[in-house]
Image 1 (cartoon, protein in one colour):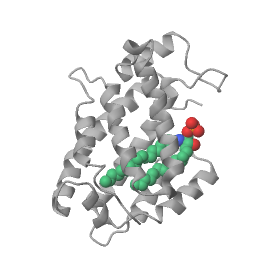
Image 2 (image 1 turned 90 degrees about the horizontal axis):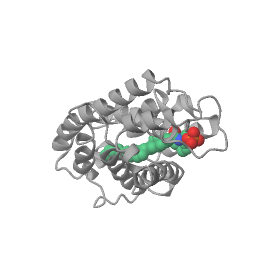
Image 3 (image 1 turned 90 degrees about the vertical axis):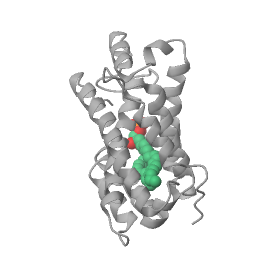
Length: 214
Ligand SMILES: CCCCCCCC/C=C\CCCCCCCC(=O)N[C@@H](COP(=O)(O)O)[C@H](O)/C=C/CCCCCCCCCCCCC
């Protein structure tokens, strides 16, 4: 599999997630979506077998970028302001989907669940050994997170695609942060920021009973 490295640097993704959280513990949507754009660039480099995943991720990031650049853009500065605005304006389908456009809350919820997968996957890569199989790390992380929200056909397609993942060493190399040891160290640095964003979002969505949006 041809993996093009030049488009991706874990450092950039880390910087985006690092600048997401403000002193007031708000999650800023600008850097949050920049982090996702960086991850999607990486996904593209893994080849066509992951295009069904990247298409969905791009569509969701695009929905959010449209809100962030739209008429109500000041309401979409942070996750907190978005939740407050969309709930107060009755824009969120809480029980079942209506003809309304996808809300920011339901769209972010999908990305948020995927962030949990990412957290587990990166932790698996970090703590794995040279001969750990990324397909196994990825499948385990997926089964412990996103799989619960996907129908059988998506779970199957995802599991098949995971088998095409490059080796752990190749992954560490394409992070573009130096040697394998340096990449592992960088993962150790990146993970707390991703965990922090995940934790704040989880708490916010739980508080507003938004964790099961249709
Ligand atoms: C150097 C290491 C860095 C690792 C970088 C990983 C890059 C990963 C980039 C993106 C992650 C995938 C994001 C997927 C978002 C999925 C959101 C979702 O759950 N969507 C479903 C529900 O949406 P609605 O129907 O309710 O609108 C949708 O049905 C899903 C469709 C596509 C399939 C999603 C499969 C997810 C597999 C996640 C693992 C990706 C494997 C990447 C391998 C590294």
